[in-house]
Length: 113
Length: 114
Image 1 (tube, one colour):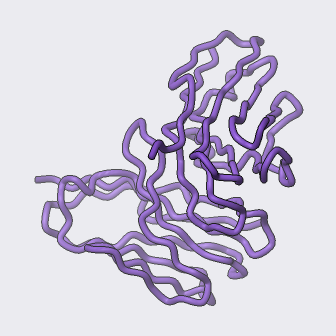
Image 2 (spheres, helix red, strand yellow):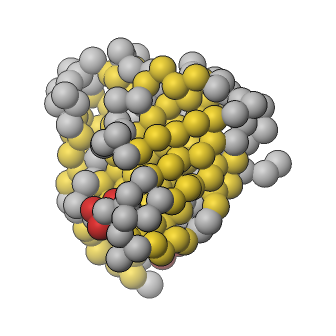
Image 3 (cartoon, chains in turn red, blue):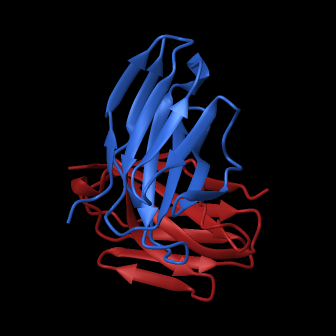
């Protein structure tokens, strides 16, 4: 059974810092990996999707990397802003599943002005 | 265009009562998913629909949980004889089809069973 772990569970940084969120998964047979953002009381917003054949994806100040063989992904946020405060979730889609996603527990990020 | 909508946004019920949660996917999306997000368990997959059929019900936690989808659009998740451990946020997502990777999530229904 696929298990997804995110470290740290919570992170507080001053505005302007670069930061890295970590995600690890136990079964490397994945189809893709996604990073989501969740604001309090809201649904999930997809940030980046990395196919299993890709090594990284970039969108603005966000960069996600994938090392499938070692079961790891990182989300790098450059020049963090208070508006980046949210919970960040990673999720993997297994090869053999009907598009269901297995989620990590999330990292709760607070960026202080 | 409109995103995924869910109703009610909040529901408080007494233990033992039945509840129905509704999801309206993005128009034209054939794939629909239900997830549950609770404090102790994180975000868990419940059930997936392609059109009106549910090829994957593997995540439903017990036979008190059921879901249906009619007309390839609206879906209803029903929980019978609710228990306190059913308290969670129930999230719905849709995608264009099962092969389109991006799932678009609704805001969720926050269920509290007293």
